[in-house]
Length: 494
Image (tube, rainbow, N blue to C red; front, top):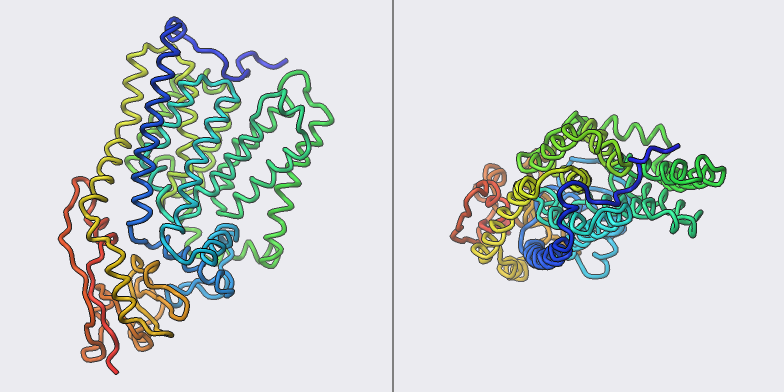
């Protein structure tokens, strides 16, 4: 016998039940608000992915994707001596996807980031559908969508050229297939659960960190197949679970065999120093990412009966716990877990018997940081558009570049300078003596490391970029150091 409180979200408790007719009007207003916020966020994000220069992670992944497009394999050549041989510990899907777009449309920061931004919007859509299929009221579905679109960590991940949100999108797709209503599940069967396993494995083959988000898929699928309704421990459903696991394990196994087998695959992580530095217990992350996390923890602890009374909430909380036990916040990883944190918040908030004023106050706290951050980002993009003018760099490139050149430049120039017939490398984090790198360079873009190693008479200045930065409050100074074109170009004297 299944406890009645394990049923899906299907009712609105407490004082909201008394709102009656007013509830529909609130839903219409919330839909309009969501459409307006969605338009503003999308326009701002499109401007961001077009104009903001690349940073370390983006240049890292773009370099590997470019090398795949060139037929060189999964190698990393941007930082001399940083990695030797093919880099297998990320998984291949992201790099081959990006190499397809590079071959089709060329290496461009906007094209490189666009699949991530599309994935972010698909995550919101898919998880709204998951909430709907689990009976969450429309106003709370829209609240989740607005909160996700505005969330600082999630929004930041949406405009960065990392693979994280593509992995979360695949997990959201698996969760959507898992979480359909019972009557739909009975009409589909084997193929659906094979896809659940395959999409989960594909997320793992985008980035191994996504493995620690999978508890929500595992828990919800187990509940749907074994505990919901009258089909308790039905033999057919055990077969479907097996099919889902086969879809996951077979997809992962093919990749592990390609890397040399399980022993070689494990050794990849053991010998990589970056792996250990990115693993630690991290229940709290960046200050702004902690706003929804703290809010979720307060709601869950103070309403634990609600939190453990629905399988979707149990799954989301479990994913947060497992992810936090393993993945250190040594990068922009908060954006991966944020959608599941927000699902937990709206799931609990819908069912608690709070007054409208109390819920409104909590929602204000949830949405305010993202609203302020979005406003500041839009302001910065407008005020400093001239300092990120790509055409200025393109003009120097057309005048100064020669076929076969080796260019030493900061990460932020990678998309603008890398191309067929010449290579871009950087001195930052180089495992090789900078003088050896400069000895082979033809063109140098000035930065602190390069200037310190610049031979006194080996290079002549051929061009320079400068601008008057208009700083936006609350944005750190290092943000402008890596997002403004303000360097000189030197060519080796012949």
